[in-house]
Amino acid sequence: MRILWVGTKLPVPPVDGGRLVACRTLEALAAAGAEITLVAPYDPGETGAAELSRAQEELGRFCWPCPVAVERRGRTGAALAAVATGRPASIVRHTVRAVGAEVARRLRSDRFDVVHAEQLQAFTQAAPAAEAAGLPVVLRAQNVESDLWAAAAALGGWAATWLRREARTLAAYEGEAVRRAALTVALTEPDARRLRELAGPASTVTTVPPPFPTELPPGDQPLSGEPAVVLLGSGGWLPNRDAARRFVREVWPRIPASLPGARLHLFSPEDELPAPLPAGVVPHPPPTESRQAFAPGSILVVPVRIASGLRMKILEAWARGVPVVATPEAAAGLEAEDGRELLLASDAGELVRAIGALASNAGRAPALAAAGRSLLARRFEPAEAAGRVLEAYRWSCAAVARERAASARR
Image (tube, rainbow, N blue to C red; front, side, top):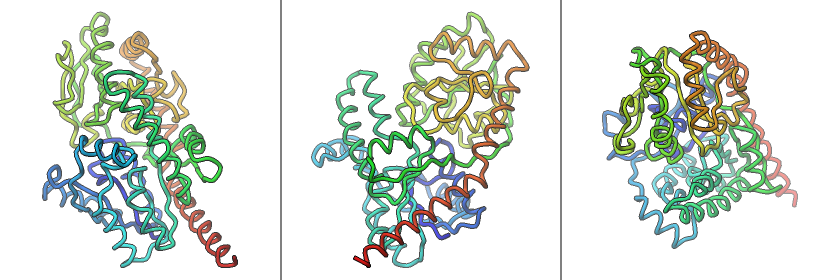
């Protein structure tokens, strides 16, 4: 199977959920024998020559990388263009002519069986040239974009009006993209149902959980604190930024009363750190390697209240033997059971109690992590997941061939 994979960013280093999903899938597909050419943009102002060289070397293990240097519109410029055109701002911002041109060039020079658009924003770059070449486009939706914006708008605040507008335009754009794609692959069944609602009956959506290894080594160095609690932020990603600020302001100040030795290790860009930081919070820059945040003996807390898709950080915690405390929103789609693979906590009081329960019971943490690893083996085993993705590609190719034959008969 020859695949032209179009992304919104280089998938290495895999330091956030979107990159991790893409990177693990590319690795698993290559291991299954697929031949992959990757077209993805990068910003030279953020990725220097040395970093780009390292990324290409890493990607070269499992695909043929074709990075495209781009300078994206700023958020303000994208917002103004969105209003002028009636399109979603996030789509406007990620639509770069050079990426579409590289996709078209690759389709002219090489032979492919299928074009893969990783996330909604890549679909605009992939679809025109792929459809002109008569190739199926498979859209993988890592989440339901419009639902994320609608949930953010529901929190209120000065940007709520703009967020509601973005949610409406994204819902229309998502529905059209899903109808237009030969097949849409969602990561969870709740997301698949929602995408079918947006697109209507003239759409084909399936669910394939992402591949993830069952066991990975933990971080090399333990983190301070009894217990050491880890919270992972994400630069520019509103759901994680909201979760970090809310946890630091509303939840963490209640921890020292029962756990005076506890420390919260907050991995976040400096300009997104809540100010002032309460006592016991230890700031860290975003990890250059994700394992740095999954230290032995630590607890991962995932307190998001805006969520869609899967929290890859939870899968990674299980693989690295780290127990997880999460909100129901964060655990949605995992098919994990409260008290077996993780501890669920809906509000500040429950988050405090869940962290305390793990700190006071030495055997609970490894039992949760072991159950999580078992769930990884059942639902996310790389070879099986890659096989299901390849099956989706083959189905798309057959569907396009049938449609072409039917058109010829007419």
